[in-house]
Amino acid sequence: MVSFNNVTFRYNDAARNALTNLTLEIADGEFVGVTGSGGTGKSTLLYAMAGAVPHFLKGDFYGAVTVDGLDTIDTPPVELAKTVGLVMQDTDSQFVAVEVEDELRFGLDNFGVPRDEYEDRLSEAFRVCGISPLRNRIIRELSGGQKRKVAIASILALRPRLLLLDEPTGELDPPSKRQVFHTLTELNKGGITVVVAEKNAALLREFCGRVITLEGEGNAEE
Ligand SMILES: Nc1ncnc2c1ncn2[C@@H]1O[C@H](COP(=O)(O)OP(=O)(O)OP(=O)(O)O)[C@@H](O)[C@H]1O
Ligand SMILES: [Mg+2]
Picture 1 (tube, rainbow, N blue to C red):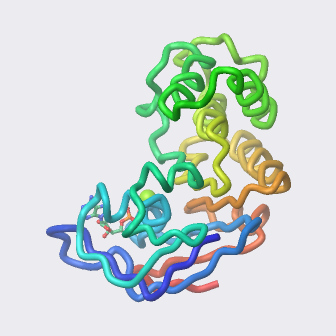
Picture 2: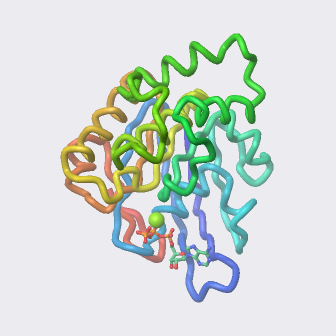
């Protein structure tokens, strides 16, 4: 599903590489955790899978990343977005709507999804994330954990085959963190390839099929 072939990336004006000589393969259907201390390139790795690096976040890029056989350099990010969904780190700042359901509808509108598919996609995304009862709630009145699930549901409604999440459990309390990981496990069982960046390696070891540790300067160990 994903292949990094000797990838090195340095952001413009950065003093050092964010990724260095990174080679890795992620098979269809895997649930992979990416850990490592601050600044070791976890977010950059996910951005490279979504094509945001180097199309939006610019820098010197060497090597090749392919996603579902598509080379991310040759493929516009909107094309990649048909396969890849990215849930960003700071989900609170990503919401555009006031009510939960409208947040999901907004994504479908942007994707040009046919109207007659809306209800199926919405009810499925709410159900898998366990937030069907929140459908008509005001987003800013939800708890942190509920908001994270809304953010995940809004990406899921786009039906990605590769789901990327950048520290999706951020400041959540331990029970809410585990709930989010249970949701990811269910999604993965349903056939979606999941890659999650998370500083808490123990949480990853408990839930993921494989854990990659970034060591800085782009070296990855399993
Ligand atoms: N937009 C940017 N411009 C320049 N340098 C950047 C940019 N974003 C990240 N970097 C640098 O790239 C390296 C990797 O950063 P990245 O954000 O991928 O690490 P991370 O493991 O996700 O860190 P964190 O745990 O803090 O989220 C760091 O040295 C960081 O300072
Ligand atoms: Mg990060």
